[in-house]
Length: 311
Image 1 (cartoon, rainbow, N blue to C red):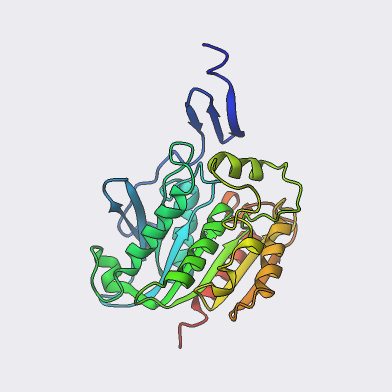
Image 2 (image 1 turned 135 degrees about the vertical axis):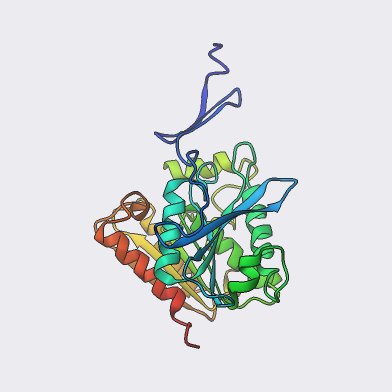
C-alpha cells in the first residue's frame, strides 16, 4: 500500500483511526444491540427514522410496565465519542440509557447523529437540533411516533449527554433559548463530564485534537460552540436548571468547572449545580456501570429528572 495513503490522519486508540486515503476504522460503537419489547431489564425499545434522506435516526425507550395513556418525563440523550464514534445502538450506550429509563421511570430518545469525518461538524449539531425538534413535534398528540404521542409529558422535558454529548446538550439548550421549542417546557439539562474549551488553555490533548479533526472549519478554541465564554447565547439557555457532573481524575475536570463558573457569571437566571465523583476518570460510569459510584451517578441523574414530578 502507498505510504502516503496509509498515513494516519487522526486516532483515538484503541477505538478509532482514520487514514489520509479516507479509510475509517471504528472499534467502538459498531456492535449493535437490536431493539426489543419487554426486555429482561424491564425496558421496551424501538428504532425510528427521523429524516429518511440523511439516515438520521434514534432509539426510543419506555418502561415495559407503563400503563396505557400514562405520561412520563421525556429525556433526549446525546452520546459521546468526539463527534466521530459512538452510537445509541451499541451496548455501552443502549445499556446506559436503558438503565436510566428504568431508574428514573421516563421516556427517552437517544439520537443517532451523523459522525465525522464522513459528516464533519456542524452536521452533528444540525442533526441533533432536527432530532430535538422532531421529538418536540409530538407535544400536542401529533407526530409520527406513537410512544411519544401516548406517553410523553412535554411539560417535563430534559436533555442529557456525556463528553461531546454534554457539549451538544449545551448547544441544544442554547439554541432552544434563542429559537424556542414549541409546546415543550425544557426543565433541565444534564452535562456529564462535558467537553468544552477556553481560549487561554494549552490545547495538546486528544480531546482538543479530536475537535479540530471533527470540525475542520472551526475558528479554533474560541469557537462559541465549545467555548462558553464566547457563546453569546449562554445567558439565554432555554432551560430552568443545569446539572454538571465531573470526575476527579478526568482530564476534562477543569473544563466542567469552567463551564459551571462561566454559566454562573453569565446572567442566566436558572439554577446550576455541579457534582464531582471522587477517584474516577472520564466516562467511568459507561465502562464500569455496575460499580458503586456509577450507580450513584445514575441515581443522581434520575433524581434530577424527577425533582418536578409532583409539580
